[in-house]
Each structure stands twice: as structure tokens, then as C-alpha cells.
Image (cartoon, rainbow, N blue to C red; front, side):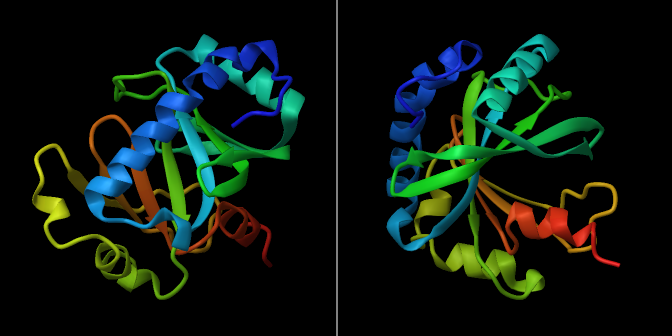
Amino acid sequence: MFPEKVAVELTDLANDSARFLQSINELAERLGLDLTTLAADHIAVRCHQTATAERWKKGFLQHGVLFSEKMIGGRPVALFELHEPLQVGPWRISMVELPWPGKKIYRHEGWEHIEIVLPGDESQLSARALALLSDESLSKPGISVKNSAPKGEGERLPNPTLAVSDGRVTIKFHPWSLKEIVESELAP
């Protein structure tokens, strides 16, 4: 995923790349989801310690620029636009989401989810996303589906989310890209 020379602060994430890619592909297969037909907006990490978030921030700043940083859901979330996109499965992704630790403890520190943009009416996001999945996939053991609507201060676009997870990794669907959401804050 990373370029050949990765910042030392991100070594653990570079080492986690193969696990994440395999897990995302396995989840997509269980869901009957063809990732090659979809547009990925960004990739996200999860950590348990503020020190880890600070270290990763320092590392990402060596590979890109801080695009946005704000409080969302009671914790800071930093967005980085990388100078060189990461190769993640069929996509080249230049945006990384780094939330600081919150109340939820994740099983694994490292890459956690990928976000897919499904443009269209926000109120129909769940229907559009669920239509991409095989009918029997949601009844498989260990698969969870969650609807939410995270909102950062100043955001003007509604940002509903449908998240599908197997407990190891998650595929999330949104109607807008992160850039569109952040740029909505700047609109008069």
C-alpha cells in the first residue's frame, strides 16, 4: 500500500497493510460485493492510545498535508491528503482518516475501514448500498450493519453512513466524499 520508503512512525501501519487488504477482500466476498465497480473515497485507521494517534499524525504529515482536523463524536478526527496515493486493492486512495481514541475499544490497532462513495439522494443511501450486497450476505453469522450520521462542526451536507462489518474490518458507504463534506463548511 505504502510507497517504498515509509515514515518510521507508520511502520506498524505498513506492516498491517497485507492483513487489512486480505480482510477487506474476504468481507467483500462474503457480501457478494464487487469492489472493482465502486469508488473508494478514503481509508481509516483506529487506535487505543493518544500517543499512537500523535505518532501516526506525525508520520502522515511526512507523506501528505493535514486537510482537516475537527471534533466529531467528541474526539478529534484528522484527515490527511497524501502526496502519493496508497494502492488499496483496485483503488489509489489519497485521503486517510485518523480519529483519536474514543470510548469504543477496537480489536485491532491499524487499518480498520474503507469508505465508498455512492452519489445520490442522502435519504436513499442505505437502499443503494444494500442493493449492492447479495441477499443472503446480511444474514451470515458475524456480519453487522449500522446506520449513522456523523457530523462535524460547520458541516452543511448531511452525511448518512451505512457500515457493514465482520468485526475485523468495515466497509462504509456515504453519499459524499470527505472533500465535499469539508468544502461544504467553507460555503457562504
